[in-house]
Image (cartoon, rainbow, N blue to C red; front, side, top):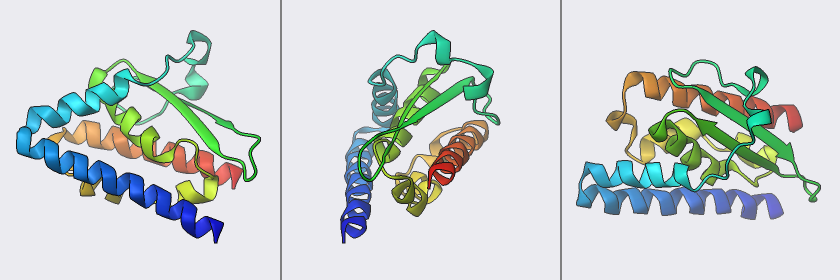
Length: 149
């Protein structure tokens, strides 16, 4: 039963984000961008020592780094941190991490993050290169979760 509740929490987070993006759409497209950029500004700073080739996400036009830690909780949860040299991409990282951080590997693997991105209505508002980078970040997160599952 716990897994069912945990999955529901992710769905609740996605639903809340969808509602937020719906309200922002009424305010104009710039409001969505401002919200995404604000999510990036709220990310904790990534230590310089973690901005390495090993933590770099391949397939992104911008420079993107992603790290993770497995908690000692029961069940263990993945906590992520990320950064980018692009303000918008850093915001997309913030958006992704809002959904997946502090979740079990199984919870992360159960969510279709690409479909979530489309559901939020931002897929058509960013360039194809940014979409490709987003997909690369999703794949990296899924790989990290699968390695811990």
